[in-house]
Length: 193
Image (tube, rainbow, N blue to C red; front, top):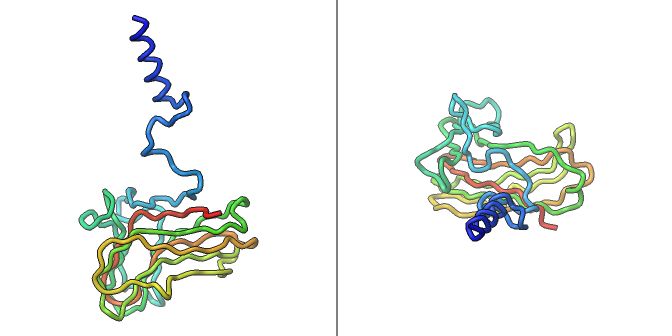
């Protein structure tokens, strides 16, 4: 009987994390990750829109689709697909994250899994900006030197920026410039120092 009670107590301790360990390592997040809502596109509203994300288009719009794709995914149940169907030059998927005081003067890395099927002259990349309270850009890294194009399978890409003292929001996202399709999945925002 005491062996049975002891085994139950050990199991309870492990499940509750009372013994200094986590019940599941899968749900444990590293302390240096900053939350991006719906980073793996698990939430889609009744209209099929990617919850927590905003789709922006150049000028007049009506040229890009921003949808959850459950067929071409890096991690289930869906990825975000950006697809051009009209004349405008870019479609940009974004999320704005309020800055916390402890992030100031730290380097932050944005990364995501990316897959492309575009024209040779198109480009795909991450969008990473430090914005003031009025929305103006303090600093940015849009992967201009490392953009992807053509047909490429899933790969993780990343960009780094320092959170400047007057940063109010961090703008994270992805962009497709030109003809084709791009898929994005498993976004991460990580404090590096």
